[in-house]
Amino acid sequence: MTRPLLYGYWRSSAAYRVRIALNLKGIDYEQVPVHLVRDGGEQHRPSYRELNPQRLVPILVVGDTVITQSLAILEYLEETGPPPALLPADAAGRARVRSLAQIIACDVHPLQNLRVLNYLTGELGADDGQRIAWARHWVCEGLRALEERLARSSATGAFCHGESPGLADACLVPQLYNAVRFGCELDAFPTVRRIDEACKELRAFVEAAPEAQPDAA
Amino acid sequence: MTRPLLYGYWRSSAAYRVRIALNLKGIDYEQVPVHLVRDGGEQHRPSYRELNPQRLVPILVVGDTVITQSLAILEYLEETGPPPALLPADAAGRARVRSLAQIIACDVHPLQNLRVLNYLTGELGADDGQRIAWARHWVCEGLRALEERLARSSATGAFCHGESPGLADACLVPQLYNAVRFGCELDAFPTVRRIDEACKELRAFVEAAPEAQPDAA
Image (tube, rainbow over all chains, first blue to last red; front, side):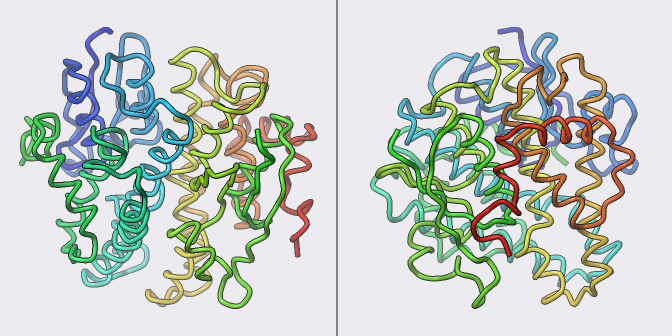
């Protein structure tokens, strides 16, 4: 695999997922920081928009291939990169892992990202308390469902699915990071927290952490 | 494949995606309607929550396998169901199709679904105009990005990717249906509209339409 280029931002939870996956697979990559706040947001520059009309991070560039959307990137790495696998071998297991990942990637994260919070405080005139309550509400809703799914399934192991980290864990850890930022109460999610802690023992996750990135504030 | 059971709602855009995929693959299935509004929403019943702690539709049940999250269901059908394929054969093409689908499934639909609109008008006290403006804003943002991606790529054909409908088209058509419901101005999205019209020529899409479902109001 040509050495990939990752356009991201240290605190972007979607970019954080991709860093974890690249590290788990031991793929060497180069980072291109895109500052989401400075100067009105570097993601709005024409040169960036040319790469991604959505003006969101991350983007992974591998040779001529430009991939946006973190879950599409993770699946691409799974299909083209080296082991370990991020998805189990059986279709039912793969569906379970993707479903767990999508609880976060579809139904939690998009509701609490920067552009949405900006709309709330801008167009809707929400105050800071309402902004935080909104973020906490959707994060807790998602974590509650995730906890229920993980706690009652025998497929859950040390990680979201069995005894090795994968695609769902790569989504869970960044979402927990955001939950803490928003001051969510996490006591009700013991399984989620246990898995988060198990992941953070691993170098792939430690080195992907926001604060460990070259562009961290 | 055991005859699948689809828990859905006629107007749910995520259930609509799954109906399209099942029809494209010619998989016979049984529908279990879950009324999202009546009696405070049947998705909140304990028996439903048991199946899906997120209390969202759709769920696909195939034998002992219970799958939530529409994109996970689509991938499962792709891996276990009959042809035609919903994803191209090459990794870069697959990444492109997934990325297009996720623009809708991650960054548009979750922002304009029922529970979010209810929070806006409830907890945040948004009026009807603000609710509609919110939905239109996020739908238009997503469609603008989608249009840019589709219009400038030589991989776009009669459909989102080449000359046969697939996973991205199964997301595009239901989102356009919602865009119309919210009164979005669609003139700026000629490629998206062209593909939507091409899809609607096909029986798989016609038979998946909300108004064609047994539980349609």
